[in-house]
Image 1: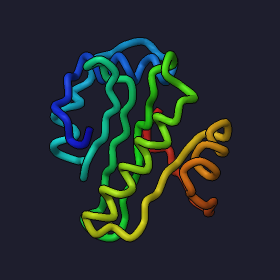
Image 2: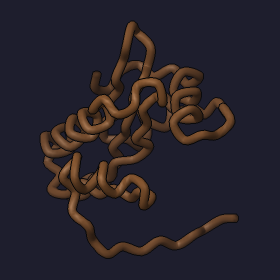
Image 3: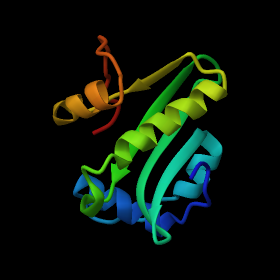
Image 4: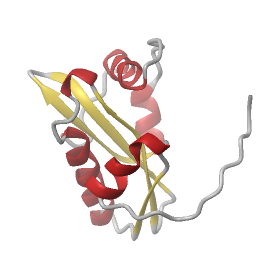
Length: 128
């Protein structure tokens, strides 16, 4: 579901489960409304089991962030469908490029399953 009404507790819990961290309720709904081009959710029996957001520069570049699938629903193609739907939404908005950063263990997912290609990139840590 695209641009679904976000429950901060539900999305914070999914994010924590998917990334193996403690649940810390974040203001997801407000952040998404302010900064995201779109977001996509996957649901099972009205429970949020997958999520990805797309931020953008207002022009040609969009960025896939926070791709998360509930661990009990992994390896079923949910993440791939979320990313492909997000890509289609970015394309429909006029974006030319969809960027993504990921950890090495997700290389096969993003490059093989979702069709991204490797590029050189840089990262500058600003805090901590």
